[in-house]
Each structure stands twice: as C-alpha cells, then as structure tokens.
Image (tube, rainbow, N blue to C red; front, side):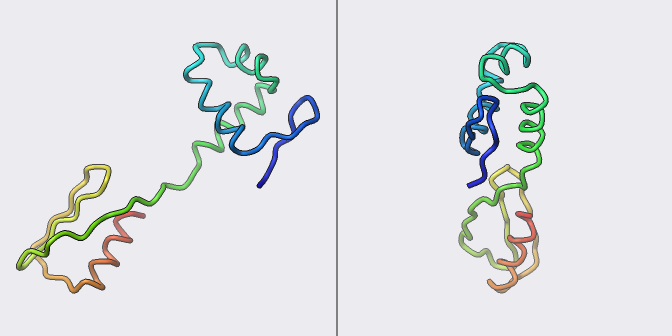
Length: 102
C-alpha cells in the first residue's frame, strides 16, 4: 500500500486520499476551505484529483446469453449495444467481448 505524507508528518493511505477527494464534491466548500479543514495543501489536493481521473477504465462482467441462429447481440453495462448477423464460435465471441470492454 502506497502512502502519501500528510502535512502533520503522518501518512495517508490511498483509501484516505480517495475519501478526501470524494468528499470535496459533497462539501459545498471552496478548494482552499476544504483543504484547510483536512490539512492538505491545495497543490497536493489538485494532484490527487488529477491522478484519480487518470484511472484506467474498469472491467465489467458480461454474460453470454442464449445464442441466436445466425447472429448475436452484445450489450455492455454502459448501454452500448453491438449486433451482428455473423456467426461466432464461443472462443471468438470471448475475444470480441474482451476487445469491446477495453
């Protein structure tokens, strides 16, 4: 677990950092006020926010439903839908799902 140095000399865990960043939107405070309340430099807080946005996309679980004759429909968790009249063997369909999720 990687820790960030706090202004008081202590260390903050990644979970603490995520909590501080997530709490800002709900706080209704300015960045300066929020950072002062949590003992964080504004520049450090801005860095944490930037690194939170750069997270790689998360993978989502998909289920392969009943195969239709002569085609398939792939519906992703974000609502996007891929339909085709092509026939796929299961191994190729799993590759297609991995590519669609990336």
